[in-house]
Length: 160
Image 1 (cartoon, rainbow, N blue to C red):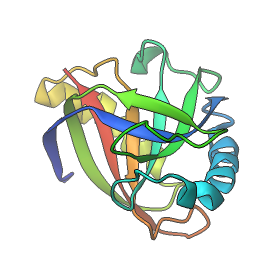
Image 2: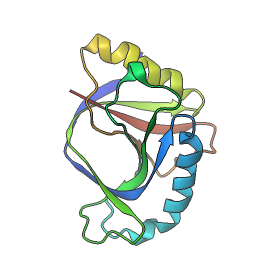
Image 3: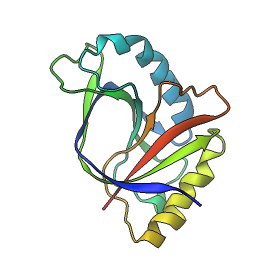
């Protein structure tokens, strides 16, 4: 049984880096962004908390039409209080507030896709929720490392 919660989230302000990816290239590109951003975290003076955010900005998300080649923007960033001092070479992103379906995932990256699929094919339809057209994101604790066999993260899916 999946344990989840419905969260009303205010706007989130993030500072980080982005690139264009597909589901085929997301793993290697996310790792590349992480290697570029992590050494620069100390430059981000208005950082809030110690989590890192892995964000997917889709153009009109539709689970039924997603393909391995589907292109979208991938962000790696951290939450900030303000955009007053965004370091050179980094970008800002506002994730508009709203309702999110949030669940905790513990496991390997390889075992995640079937869980993700079940959320869209089973859980959200059974609960009567539709996916909203805002960014999806994962909130990663400081212990997160993609090279570890098992990681823990919070998965945030926008719903309407």
